[in-house]
Length: 246
Image (cartoon, rainbow, N blue to C red; front, side):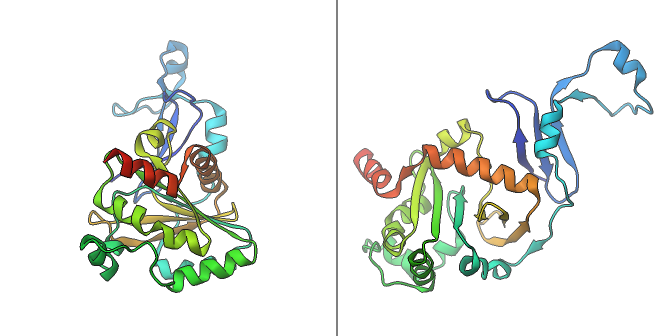
């Protein structure tokens, strides 16, 4: 079972922090051990396996889940949100590659050395163009390793087509993302009120999404968006930096 960062009130990367234990309704709490003997003496029904930590009330208020864990749903269940959102659809991409890219003819053409930057508009880009023409915003931040993985180089090469359709794509180094304590999972955030968090298998295949309006999840997504967007670099500029360094 993996841990998913829910949030922290620490500014310097130390505790306290809350994590969700995937596949369960449990939350893992990271904090300083309680050592006050008077407090320990007052604890009840203590098992040998239990330990005790201190966390600030603000951590629980801001990040403790307010609802049960959402169910995994097929990605098709959220397809309508990409047309029906009112203001902003924002994406964080954290993975080093995606099976959905590797299984396309476009991927094979790119690997063969073809320029894929100006491919004809597909259904995704046509919808982006329609929505952005109405004043809506499609935005995403993609994490990139140093050096970039093959999957990340493919996305850098294909980004101009999405940019031309109206998306605003920016890139952020993984090292910066880690220093900002950004989440390690992909998600879409719609209108700062609905979060669709992705689930992947070990081969980077999308298993589905967890759709939620839980204020805790939404707050964490909004904070990640604000931090990532502030530090990320526009895609064209970032791609030029990568070319210059290779």
